[in-house]
Image (cartoon, rainbow, N blue to C red; front, side):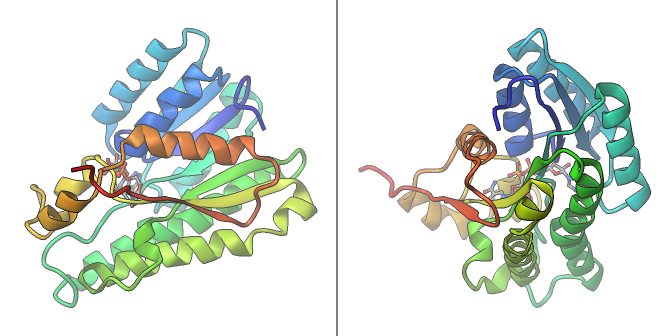
Length: 249
Ligand code: NAD
């Protein structure tokens, strides 16, 4: 599916990977983009950047907590109400547990991580399917390379992201049934505000040695991968890994 003239929903659109993808979709000629996040100031800035990337792109800002079913329903209804159609959904909102590391993470935080990083992806996909089953569409879910390997310090995050990969793989047959392609993208370590959230406000010490050996990805690198997934009509039920390259010395 080409992005030109299409209508998209992007969650986690107020910063980082979601913002970069919104700007890329606008530059590629998307007809409409619904920008969803809990961070209203960040959403306003993403809308400004997306409109700057392409004058013809319609945007709506829909403040949304993706863990709230009513908020997701409002997001989908607002998007279809404003633009008439829905072609692409990027379920990208996510959080990390932050300090202290597991197993000392507060129980409420464990629940919140799994609710946002996995639960909301499944529920949002349900809404997307209701809107797309008549004419097809593409759903991309943000997982992580952290969902591919054991990761004790944030075991809830690793489990949620592994869940996103398996959820997306499990949706493979939606392509044959309804023309809906569901895939996951697995970013490596990417230069976004989430790196500060890993340390509860500043980058944690343990990230230093890792970053000394790898090139950080840019949010635009992940946006490129999302575009490739949307455009490649052969991809369904797959997960696409965007790896860090070793640092050049
Ligand atoms: P980010 O913190 O810049 O963006 C995440 C966005 O999600 C924020 O704008 C935040 O407000 C929003 N969000 C959080 N809770 C929400 C909720 N309940 N409802 C709606 N929005 C909510 O970080 P990012 O790196 O751009 O993260 C985007 C996605 O990429 C996340 O799912 C993250 O887990 C994943 N990821 C990031 C990296 C990385 O290194 N940056 C690596 C792998 C995966």
